[in-house]
Length: 432
Length: 121
Image (tube, rainbow over all chains, first blue to last red):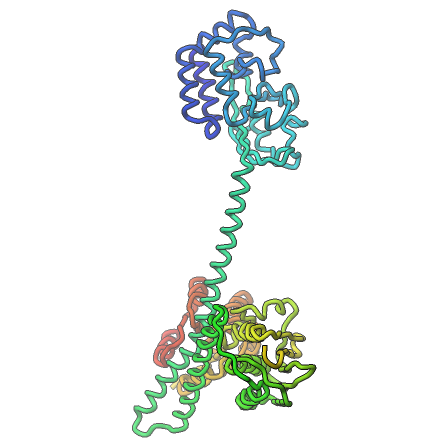
C-alpha cells in the first residue's frame, strides 16, 4: 500500500514536472522510488516525526530540511543517501519548484525558486510570496491551488521584470490532502527574442501583403486597357469581315484601340521608369530648358482637357537653363498634367512655368476632386492609388518626387477635398 | 416578338461604355451609368430586367452596391451580371449570392449575350 502511495506521489510529480523536469531526472526519481524511498517513508513513520499524512502534505520533496521551512519545527535528522540525492536533485533543478497547500502556504521551495523570488518561506502565496503583479491573470493557478482545476499554465512578470512561465498541477497526497506543485521557469530571454522574431515576422508579413496587393492592383490596372484592346480588336475583325464595313464604326474602334494601347504603354513605361530611378540609374544630364519641355507637354494635354470639356490654360515665362535629363523632366511634367486632367471632371486646369529668385517653378492647379487630409500623407508613395477606379497604377506622383529630388528640387501641394489641388515643383537652375 | 428587355450597365470607363452600347443595343434597351448612385436612381425610376455591374467603380464599388441592394430587399427580381478584370471579388460575391452571374474582361459579345439569355430563360 505504501509503495502504491509513493508511486502515486511520483506520478503526480512527474505530471506536474512535465516540461519542467527532464526525463532523465524523472527516471532518477523513479529509481529511488523502487529501491529506497519506501524505506525512507517507513523511517519517517516509525520515527514519529511525520505521519504518513504530513509526508504527503509536504510531498516527497519535503525531506529537504533546508528550503522546506514550513516544517522546520521537526527535529533535524541525518539524511540517507537516497534522501540527500532527491533533495539535491530537486534543489539543483534549473527550474523553480514551489509546493503550496490549499491555503496558499508555501511548503517547499527549491533554490531556483528562491533566486527568482527571494525569501518566500512561510508566507502567503499571493501577498508578496511570488510578488507577482496583482493585475496578472493568476486566476487559473488559483483554481488549481483551490482544487477546482487540475492543471494550469501561465506567464507572469516578476518584481524584477523577469518573464516567468508558471505551470501548476494539483496533487493529492496519500492522505487525501491536496497541494499544488508549481514549476517556474525564467523565460525572459527566450521571450524577448521570441518577441523580436514575432515583430520581424509581422513586418515581413505586412510587406508581403503589401507586395501582393500592389501586384494585384497593378495587374488590375494593366488588365483594363488590355481587355479593351482585345475587345475592340474583336469588333474591328468583325466589322472588317463584312462586305461593306462601316467606316464610322471602324474609326471609333481604332480610336479606342489606340487610346488604350497608348495608356498600356505609358503604364508599363512608368513602372520601368520608377524602378530605374529607384535603382539609382541616372540619365545623362544636358542643358535642359524647362519652359520648352513644359510647353510641349502642355500642348499635348490641352487636347485631352478639351475632350473632357475643361478650360485649360498654360503659360510659360522665360526660365534659365538647368542641367538635367530633358526626358525625365518631361516625364515629371507629363505626370503632373495627366493627374490634373484625370482627376478633374469640370472646371479648369491652370498650369504655369516660371522663374523666381534663381529657381524654376512648375505649378499645376486644377478644380478636381482634391485630396483628403488623411490621404495627403500617402500620395507620394508608389502604388498608392487612392481611387481604385481611375486609370493608372499610382506611380505618377512618386516619379515626380523622385525626379524633382534627383535634381535637388522638391514637390509640394495644397488641396481641398472636392475643390481642387495645386502641385508645385521647385527646381534649382544652372549647373550643379 | 415580346417587348425588348431593359438592361442597366454600370461602368465608368468611357470606352467600355461604348463597347457595351454596341454589344447590347441591338437586342435590348440599354441604359448606361458611370457610378452606383446613378445606378440606384435608374433602378428606382424604371423597371430594369438585368443589371451589368462592373466591380471597380468610383466612390462605391460594385460588390458594395450589390450587397447594399440585397440587404435592402428591394429589387429582388433583378438579375445581375458582375463584370471584373480579376475575378476574385466577383467569385466571392457569386459564392455568397447564387443568383449572380460573373463575366471576366475581356469577353466576347456572344459570351455576354449567351449569359443574358440563360438568365432570362
